[in-house]
Image (cartoon, rainbow over all chains, first blue to last red):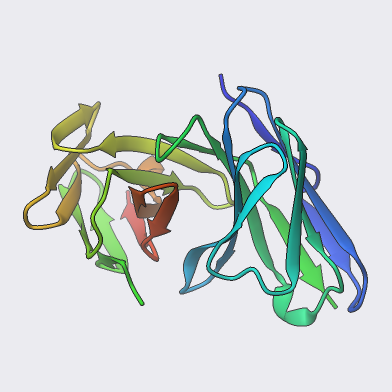
Length: 112
Length: 107
């Protein structure tokens, strides 16, 4: 079974802190994605990566950066957390293109 | 911009009822996906479609490429079907998501 794991299920951080969210997949997938999910807005793409060290901005990249140094690991970084970044963050991976996506369990981040 | 629209937003059904969730999209797609999200966050993929119809147990998904429309049907609904159902379309390397349909099935 494909497994996508995320480093934390729940996280509470203070405004201004640097936050790292990690995602690891074990199926040698090319593509990895970071989304945030907010009530009424659905899933919105922050960044995606289609290869090691490659990244593309999604719909809402402001305030975020990403890192993909190894194929299996995709990190989302909040350089200076703000309260409007309180959200559920979901990582996903897919083999390539728009094949089936496999999602991690999500990290509920609260910024106070 | 709403590339993907779902209806209804919320749905309450009695156990055993036949349920339909609709999805319309405005972009050219390579594939359409139906996802299920239970309370607590985990999302699982139910179907990936590029044409026609697929069936898995009590779930049926159809797509009409010409009309840019897909439906997810649940036959003989059960309380364990209570979840948010999300339509997503894939184009290029990107996915666009609907805002989801929250389904509650009452025993």
